[in-house]
Image (cartoon, rainbow, N blue to C red; front, side, top):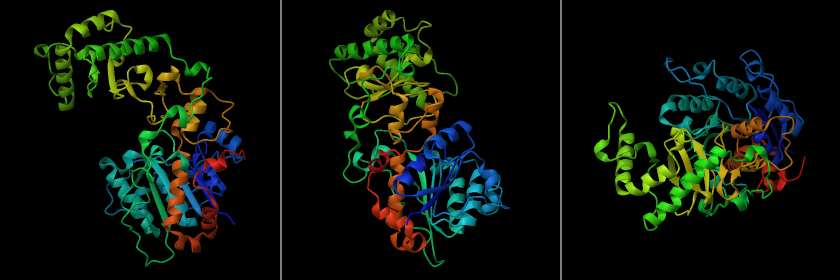
Length: 440
């Protein structure tokens, strides 16, 4: 006995990897992006190409019966004009189509994923609608969001060295109207699991990094090497100048390096920016001779250094050089962090640069960062497309952990509504990698 699941907004199949690792059978998947659907089909043997707005409406629901529904859905704003929170207010959004499936098929467990901001103050209205509409369908779901990241899971549980905070909505269907639908606590909080200390992550060891990568997309350009070498010279040399004193925690802005007496603040400048400008001016006055020599040596104010490359965000604590850090080229400057866990993999070009390797992470390493198994096949598409798909994917270890945690917390209820799911949970290992390493 197993359980059936449906995979809405499936992408390349991050949810599929997690649920199949626990013994589930995918009976329906849907993805509007043709290239993502192609990758899904060639790895999972199921063609998801389609449109949920066609397959799930108030007139028909083509999604088959299932026990578990998962979706990493886009969250459009809901109308605030209605007098009460309800299903009608979600009409015209993709969440409304999910509700049509839930209303018709009544899955025993629902697991939704979205960006961190969904639980923020700007989306309080949307959050309340989602929670209340699920309860209207008789689902047990906490008011408090489940916020979680793969770096909070130890390697033994399928964790990964990536800080990737996402909001998850874990809901279980009640089999009686008398059950409390508003539990006090979410399935997980934004804290490490067990005694795991995220500071113990080591990218090279835990990802792991490959030592023989020779892919063109991983290489740094001459311009990028210039920027890194210039700032590395700054980091190494100013440590001697400051007698080993750590670099300041505020962003260093070369364009703001002039005496305090010459500061000019434009009307309307935010307070946080004024504070950074003042700190940079004070930093310049303290180290004026050193800074002037460095900027002249590297011609920092020339066209070779765009404004965004004349900024350094040092978050690497006691690292001795930039080449010992993980770097990102960001609109706010060059950000350097310790080589412990990586910033969130994103769907654009801010791919992590591993200083010790003097290159970007490869697509295979990016796949590992998301918990995608080694045998997963991305052939037939560009490297840029693969990076984008991985940046849009869910983390497999996180989904697997939350699924198991939800089942464990609701064993008695799910034993009657989804016995196959409970049986699969009892047979499943705590680490999905133990299953996924075997090619399907």
